[in-house]
Image 1 (cartoon, one colour):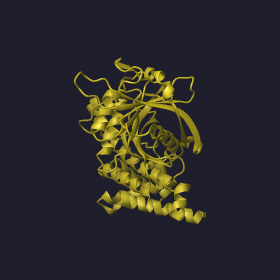
Image 2 (image 1 turned 90 degrees about the horizontal axis):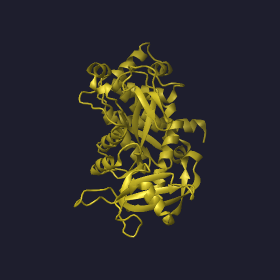
Image 3 (image 1 turned 30 degrees about the vertical axis):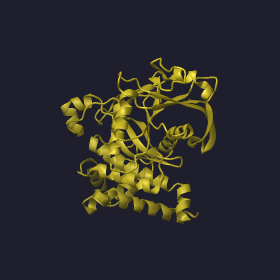
Image 4 (image 1 turned 135 degrees about the horizontal axis):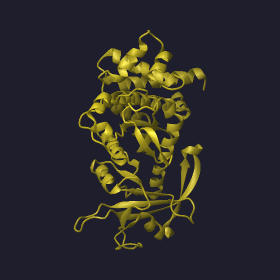
Length: 387
């Protein structure tokens, strides 16, 4: 395909996306600024700060001040834009799941909203900065974030002066990371989209016993990664451990290794190369009070080396889904990690330089739109539009 044709398709996607997302703006000047900011996120080289975006898009001398006001102070609501982005991606792609991903944003100062000393599980160490949880629409071909929730430590919600300076809404309460991740999903479920995809979420450092029921109560199917020590009850009387009460998930899986079966899956991190894992799925439930009927669940284990313990353990209420399909859903986390590293970091997800709660949400909403525009014009999608 010629560069001219590819550019034309890119412009078409950005134009369609802008029309779909910014219809909620009441004023023409707001729509224009949103489109300008989106183009700046897609074309600015380096960090996508307001200053750099203003320099890239050019225009009047007060462009930087105008964009700063639009992001930090203008009273537009980012939620309708995110809902429209969700609907647009549902129509333009074929998402298989909502994947929840934590995002760490290093910050050196102390006045940016949410900054604290935070543990980063993937680094295995503490860092200073912000942490947010994104809900991504994901398939094996692409992924894009559609909603975000910032983790706000206690000092950012209990200190009236600090909360007021950052514009944190009244009534906001501190959350644990897993509470923040679950709330991000519940917020997304309120968008009104008729398609509630399975949510793939990491609850290894949280409490699946309380988090999963909150999600299922909202009608969202759940596939949750759990720690090896998470305790569940074997629900099949033909399996080892039945009647023994709540047992660690790893112990249950080690007792049923003879049920493992090979499952092939495409690895997005290796350009779709085929991998094979050994997988077992057995019926379990959470411990429940006497007389209360437990909710059926499946415990899914994955082995890469048959002689070693399982590398991943998952719980799901998708009890009728084949275990091969369940395993492939878990691999969508690889797709999200890849797209975050190769696209999200270049379209501004980490780059908001302001200090306010509202400003961060508006910037990251438009950065998510820029991410969507980028992945929708990737080669496989571009070729489909050109056909």
